Image (tube, rainbow, N blue to C red; front, side, top):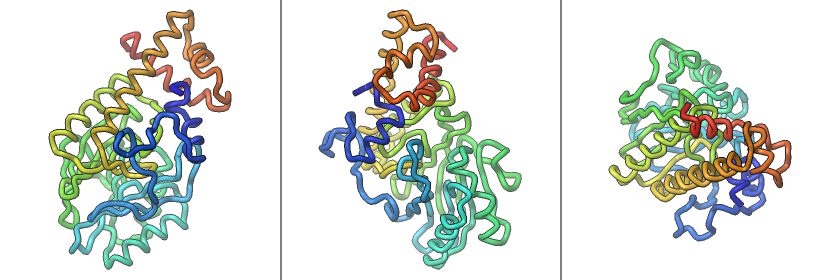
Length: 293
């Protein structure tokens, strides 16, 4: 079972209704309920699901429309791919609420989250800015970094830097709803692929675990998949999974594997080889961690 965890193979099985690591009982708290994703959210946050499902994007990218109940401006988090139909639906959703788009934020710069940002800003008219940690994905001269507070439309969104999935990954805290927007750092089911350093990712997870406990966070609003209404249990699962994976990699190295490819050939021997490149990327991050890099 652990050979599948953290790969797109697990995600494909999830889409068929079977997950070998998610307990079917919600009380177990490992992951959230598989509820309807499009239209889910909290009092202030509403999900508009992009039609870009794949093994790596799960059901599609979750675009979040966030606004105070009486505000005339909304903040968009992760506009998604550059797909005219999706972007129009995001804009129509905001306008149906009697609002306009005041600001666009990115949890990170991967195209399934960011590619539509510039186009959506243009569709919204005016001078809508796109703020991100990485300057390459900004529209305007204002970025995002640790400790920033976004107040557009009377909102309070607090910014945390949580690298690991990518170097520029951010998490947004919406205190009024007790909601943590995690981008791809924590998904609604399955686990994420790493392109950054595993040490950074583990630190980010541990920080989020402590933060969720200290703030009594009510829900995680991820970049893909359903929301998670037991944040601490979800983060515990993510941390446990990474420890299990590290143990597997260490065992493979002890058995003679020297490269990421050789580890994958041992650990993922019963997984479709088309999925090995994504697994190899995560395994390399684990080998670097074990080697102190």
